[in-house]
Length: 214
Ligand code: ITT
Image (cartoon, rainbow, N blue to C red; front, top):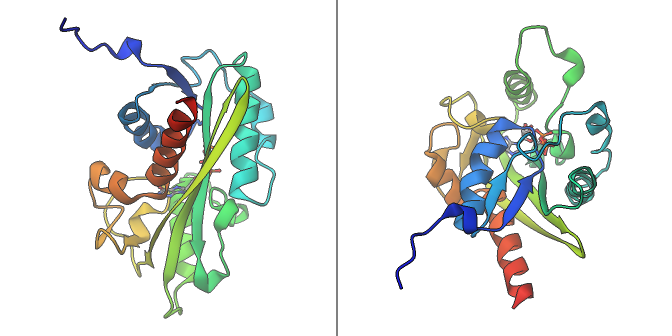
């Protein structure tokens, strides 16, 4: 019998993030892995002041687990996928690292976006640096009733000397991917997804979860 494929038949997981740039990348990724992504809003998990105090740890792994566990509880025990990620620059001893989202946030001026400010601060900090190696790191964590599982993904590259392109989010306009030989601010979403830290972490995680069920 030939059955029409329906996305409704896929198992659901909640994407534990309110970062629109991440959601744009995560949705197709989890679909590719055989899951249907549900946003926090669609799952009825409204924004709450407590969320600001969940990511307080010094490692991507601890923060990803904290977010996944928090939203698992708030969603009444549904399957949740969270990730914590950031940019680690060798010449800056690994900074901004787990602090990538609000790096040097004290100097953020009114009317300037967080992403634009972060990029500006990074270009300033790297102005006199010849050694420009850096990597994006992501730890993705799945929490369900009965278990948790995490995987890490990385992508190697270099920090450009000026912004390049307007695609992506965060530090994408100044990250040159060695594998793609292109800037994340310019490459297509599909190209970024072939090599990115997030794609590698999520694919490995959902593959391992599926293998664990066999
Ligand atoms: P959630 O906690 O809601 O998932 P967030 O933006 O707070 O969203 P993180 O704490 O993981 O997420 O911070 C990640 C930051 O690292 C993000 O805000 C960007 O500045 C940067 N970053 C991570 N992945 C990136 C990518 O693929 N491209 C560009 N910048 C990225």
